[in-house]
Amino acid sequence: MKNHTCANKSASKTSTTPSRQRTISSYMPPAPDNYSSIKDRIVEACVEFCALDGKPFDTVTSEGFINMAKQLMNAGASIGTG
Picture 1 (tube, rainbow, N blue to C red):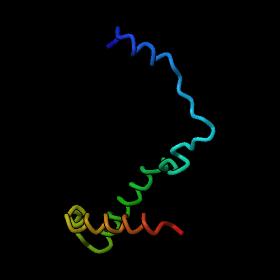
Picture 2: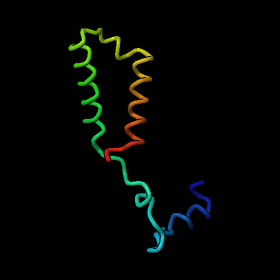
Picture 3: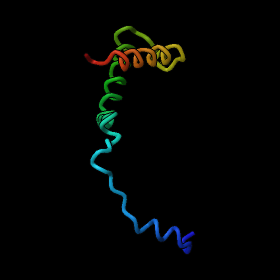
């Protein structure tokens, strides 16, 4: 495909966004870059849960606990922070 003439023509064109066209980030803002800090807080909360309640760490890896955590995350996502 490197020698194909259509590929060479399209490579030389530059795409510009007209000013009247909205960008995708105007509809949905980019995701925050702090996912690692969110993950760290969740891990810390799971460790604290196991330590304070005397539960084995396997508790937070069970299918039921993971399902509950997903439902809580979905609820938080749909409700938002107000």
